View 1 (cartoon, protein in one colour):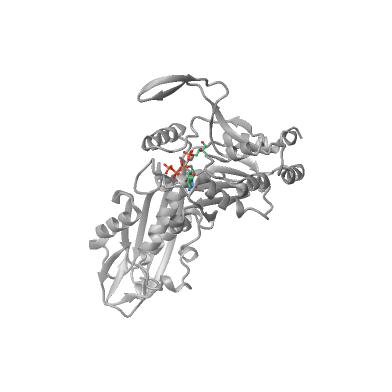
View 2 (cartoon, protein in one colour; view 1 turned 120 degrees about the horizontal axis):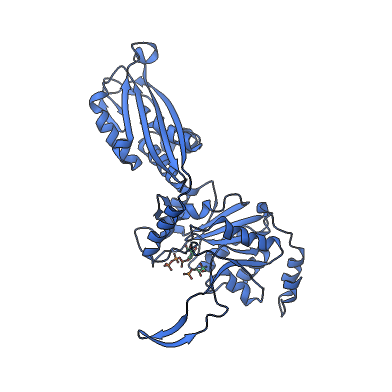
Length: 407
Ligand SMILES: Nc1ccn([C@@H]2O[C@H](COP(=O)(O)OP(=O)(O)OP(=O)(O)O)[C@@H](O)[C@H]2O)c(=O)n1
Ligand SMILES: C[C@](O)(CO)[C@H](O)COP(=O)(O)O
């Protein structure tokens, strides 16, 4: 009620009514909107900063992971990054095309939340991957307590100067000044109305609320919640992550596959083409070793198997090179915060002889997964002429993968 009293002036009455009826948020009713449509020009690099790797995992994936447990996560990405986003994040978040300015991107993300059960939204920079749960919880607690808007800030502690031409031209008071951070939390109806009125060149969403006279509660910020802006910020963030040194999370997965022989004059095994008097039958290139390995990685991630990610019913995967599947599994592991510790593939075949090619297979698999060959083992055994392998009706493969996460 105190906050409502602070709102006055024409055009604010409709909003005032919504404030009186807004339910208290629970995490199921709080959405997270992550802005990731910027170009990262100050950071530079081959990719916009949110897609760059920070300690083995993309900046954006880290920012998203910080908000586990919220009702819905919407991510705004540049239209040109949509394919990459679908591949890396599809299914886990709602992807929305962002705009030319941060405010336009936020508005696009807010619009998809309207009409849902969501009552509140946390708007966070995709470029702030180190936000802590303490910072997030404080914003949510302020909303829970009835604030229409709440955001983390850090009181300015350094003296402030004005300067021009490399010399100090004046002194500014730091009294009552704060450095703004995200996530900035709002009642959904209030922030959506503010954006529809026009976000313009607002640096953040607090500024829009401020323009409308809505009080914004300041919650504690965190020095580690830096916005990656300049190239040196990446190294600083790496150091913070190294200091956090959270516990290690080791995962194990296994995979098994079989392909039958059919007409042909070559087989593909672990990415290497071997001349043979028969071929292997399959929807893709029938690389049984690579399929078993791919399933081992998906298994360690608890992300199903190849068929879930590349359905055989989809004609686009007919005859596909199996390295597409393995590359995807390895990339998914990285996105989910895991490094591949080691993999071990055993091919079970009477013929062709695998031993002479095992080194080439090891190098090929390592290259596809982007890891050192020393972490890859490829070996083979026969089936002592027993069973379908022994009768040379097909080739089987088993594989194991360990993934190491925790940072
Ligand atoms: N049109 C835009 C511009 C920015 N952002 C996002 O807003 C956040 C904060 O912006 P900033 O650090 O300024 O990012 P960039 O605009 O990418 O950086 P730069 O100004 O250096 O190009 C980032 O997560 C960025 O991706 C956005 O979603 N849409
Ligand atoms: C929203 C913000 O992170 C608050 O500090 C910031 O304003 C966005 O970054 P920019 O560099 O001002 O675009």
